[in-house]
Amino acid sequence: MQSIVLASASPRRAELLTQIGLSFLVRPADIDETPASDESAEHYVERLAREKALAGSAFGPGSLVIGADTSVVLNGRILGKPANADDATCMLEELSGQTHQVLTAVAIACKGSCESCLVATDVRFRELSAPEIEAYVATGEPMDKAGGYGIQGRGGIFVEELRGSYSAVVGLPLQEIATLLAGAGYPVWETWNSRQESRNE
Ligand SMILES: Cc1cn([C@H]2C[C@H](O)[C@@H](COP(=O)(O)OP(=O)(O)OP(=O)(O)O)O2)c(=O)[nH]c1=O
Image (cartoon, rainbow, N blue to C red; front, side, top):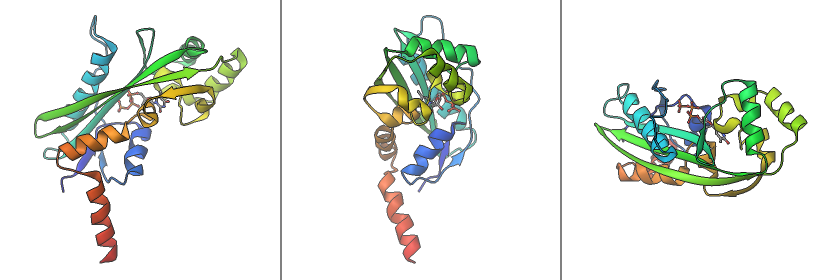
């Protein structure tokens, strides 16, 4: 079977791929993440996922290269990763008591072609108090995460309701990535069988 390259520096994405039993190399892609003028959030997120996958192809020609991007969108505005603690505080104040969208796109590049999909998940936060936001920001958890929170971490206590894909919020939609991999001739479950066979040998 072909090898897989994860073109991402996100430890969450690596953990999610490991969770579904994949072996892969990690080769983060360094791309310009500035939104184009008048670019919709949906277009931006999918474009970045594709650019990361295609940039990662340089490290693994002949491999299946996975790129992804996650952004939080509140009232049409893209919230990326906070620039500093004050920025994280502002984001969390804005998300408090509101429903936002988490957009995650995943792309798989192979031999010059690229397939991608976009997953939108609605997340509702309860009202957050100022001391709670301050304490959360002080943990450092918001700093490398879109929207300034991690649903899989302490930030999980803010989430009142989620409609969509939990794994997409964490950084990689598992059902969709397995479908893309199967379309590229790499059904995830077949790797489980081959490992089982090698264990039995
Ligand atoms: C909303 C949310 C985001 N995140 C993370 C997922 C992504 O790692 C990050 C969004 O930033 P991204 O720019 O999508 O990813 P990244 O910079 O971490 O890694 P790379 O570009 O190399 O792939 O936010 C969580 O871990 N939990 C959450 O609940």
